[in-house]
Length: 312
Image (cartoon, rainbow, N blue to C red; front, side, top):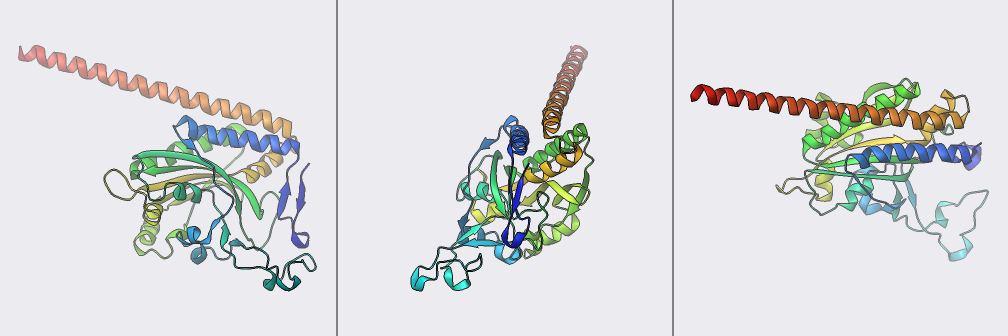
């Protein structure tokens, strides 16, 4: 059983019970494992960043309605005590830190000013914070956990990662008996960027995997937006391209709780079985690809031999 809490009684925050915690950890292990199996390195990011860091990404221009910021208490004139469960605006000093609404920011800030390989891959999980106009328990929280796998490097690499993870997400959901829709969505990062905004109109840069009206995962193309903003470069000197795959862990928990009618032990067993099925399918696909390459090589060798025989 979970406990929901929040200011003024809103179901904005969740304290997960033992069964839910086990299931969320298993899900996170599955999603992180997909990245690690592809060669990703895992990093850890803090749950808040300097406002100056988040401002680089136009967070406060494009997402002001979602933003949470943090400042210390003003200890003068005894104004640091809450009144009716809240601090007034005069009780808080300058808010110099911001709480992120997406996990991937930590990956770009980690590589800021550096050079990455053409096929770099990292994974990380973090707390995200969103100031929503309403909350709905596990489906929509003020603070939730998001696992991401982030690709940095050449554009083709970023697209191959999204293609692989799209297949895995769909196969995993199907193995769980969860029907997901795949819907194109806009990315507000490009709202103030003429060239990339036009590209977004021509070709969607974000796809959400939705259970009903609830997005529980997404694949996102950023082109070189974050590479430019953080000065991340490739050996060629051009700015790195990036993409990311995101999983809202509490939202997956909400879906599986419904799917298995509150039997979280059954859901946990199903997640383990589905993960094994996806892994087996990926192994079979790799083996088939390898066999195809071997066959093609053998065919080329035979052809070359035949050609040599004709010449002689």
